[in-house]
Length: 402
Image 1 (cartoon, rainbow, N blue to C red):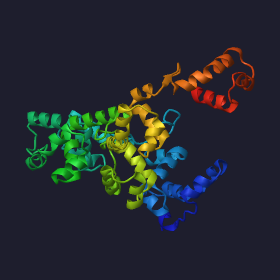
Image 2: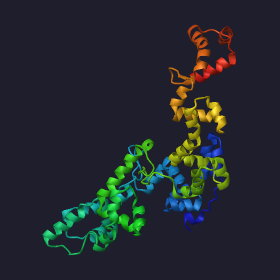
Image 3: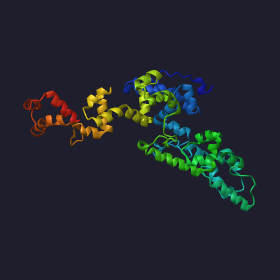
Image 4: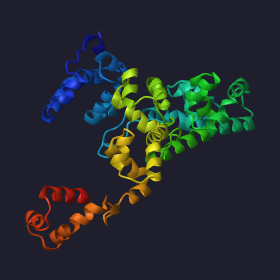
């Protein structure tokens, strides 16, 4: 019986319980949590995903734990000689040949490009080095695309060509001819393009990797560039993981009804949340993240009449807020952000540090503040000297200096 069959795993520490542990206890808890998975990885040829299914640990968590605490096992699994120069090397690069694959096909690939082996076809060369012909051909097409055309051209000149068709089949070209330009000229992924045209995902992906290396490289470059402009990214633009920047379909479906009610404007956000049963914080975050225009339009519609009235008949913000059933502080903040001209006309003055305060308040407290800044001393005595309430003066100073 194999070690994988002998071992029965029970994970006793849940993720929530683990996060609640003191930092000092997490190392030993993690060691216990991953012990069975590490033993399986060391004593069997099971993949990380297969081990995860047996142990109940997520593949991502197990992969991270192994790469951080058991790199020697990874080196052994992928056939890498451990030395002081490769301790920080990536076991598997995000794209391109992995180290294990490179070592596996290295000799066969070198032989494929060597004129000494020109009389043999790829299947014969593959058998010489203990690999499969299809595997060798795939490696050459994806990572060394110049070798096969050069071999066939030379074999034709030497008169030893076998006359077999190589390259994309006419049927493949016909099946994918409409999808290729869409992939090249859009930010859609291979899977999204394949689904759009109703073609095989794996077949289209292989076709692109074999015969359109330039398109794959260009898309990878755009993804890398997208990682550098996260703060400037717009909804619908390409993101670093290859997906279009935007909410997930299941998230959009979750909030669809709530968003429709919110856009109608007849109900408050609280009423929308109560009627639809969506998570309050989740819906607010969804609006802020993906529906900023709708949020702005809703706010503008909410405050539009009050702002128009305030422009036509200038008076205190609190009086207008009370008249239209608004929160005075929230309405005042909205005016500062979206109608600064009204704020300036409301008897406000902007200080050197950019803070806006009422002109009357500034004139009231200014002599005491200037004396306190210039001469120092007790703020309470300065407040008494100028006939001011100490707590009010202190609160005003904190507001303008914080």
